[in-house]
Image 1 (cartoon, rainbow, N blue to C red):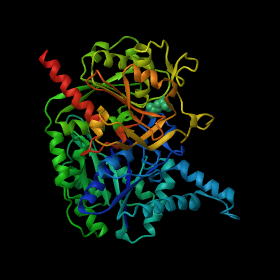
Image 2 (image 1 turned 30 degrees about the horizontal axis):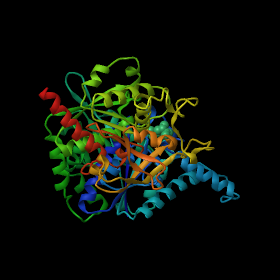
Image 3 (image 1 turned 90 degrees about the vertical axis):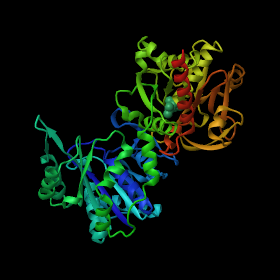
Length: 537
Ligand code: GLN
């Protein structure tokens, strides 16, 4: 088994995850089984309790792991499923070490960062690697070299390499090259400093991937090679491209696989990128665009909705149309702003969410979509709010609400799942991960999935209150997807509407570049029809 550790220098948000996933894809296309581990040096045990505004979206895995959004990149690029233990955090490591200490496993010893924490990190990495049965494991170290909190992880991967043959593990360091002033000179000093910081920890990078706005010029590559003691062919330009899915091709053009193969003594040769190129060609040759309004309260940080952005893009690529997302702050809608803009969109999507703030704006968006026959997709919280809107305005249940948002509502049409009652801890306790969904034939959902049983990923505490199901269905909202026991409502749709579909689950997490999530495909197909109809008017 071979390891590729990917570190980051200079600053965060360099697209380290995209670089790592792209390398993974190229290796996979050479014929290797590739898997990945993401290390996050924060003290939370997982991303589940974190505000998306701080760390972007919480990605949900098949096994219910609530993890860093980079695991979504790996799943999409590598077309694999990952598991909770593929995301190692400081919290998980310390929790395990402290539990071992309490059990008496270290009896007699002073428990220390080195060797106990670093050993634990190494063991967790090796365990995941073993379970994955992969030929190559990519270990992405979150954070920036130099941060106090990443130190134990860097030390652990340094030790990991020490125990291996030199051709079994390499280090890829991602940095930033800034272009300064009118002369447009590419500045390498931050890269030099971050490599120095890394070398101070005993790690010498084998490959340096430089993020920059323009392609790195020859002189810049030569300079970095000289000052950082890395061969010129191992300095890779990761300049801005129009879409992340172009990055694997960008890296491949610079023969990154030849360099990696030499270092790791890999024999399989060149990646077969025929399918990927076909996908990228489709992606870049789309014509026209549909406007999709995404209504949320974290619209200030696009990473909060990254899987939606990708899922929309996958569907748009398959259907040959560009997607223009109109970011709608739900609180703006509440105050009566941007409503006209909403009426002119070709589609509306309400993603998952929590809490009262902005929820009335989302309910307004659901009403607007229903009444104006604008294609609509509600996800999780969006599904629950669509049900509330329907109950308030079609069933005339005044002030109907979710018990999450108003505990004294006269009509709690969305209520706590029975298994959630009495749960006190917030971390990892929702209804999570892939769950059985039965889809009824003859419905819009069935036409899209073409299956009667699917497994989709969940993350919620509340559900449609069973007491209201009959009433809601009688008034024309059909629950076309249900749980195995028929008690939990999973998909809702309206008959007399071109596309008004909502799901309790999150289809965006399973959308893959060449296999878009069905409910997104449905939304975009309807949005195209809506756009063409409006043009004719
Ligand atoms: N807040 C809602 C619940 O807990 C919806 C959750 C979500 O959208 N992920 O059920």
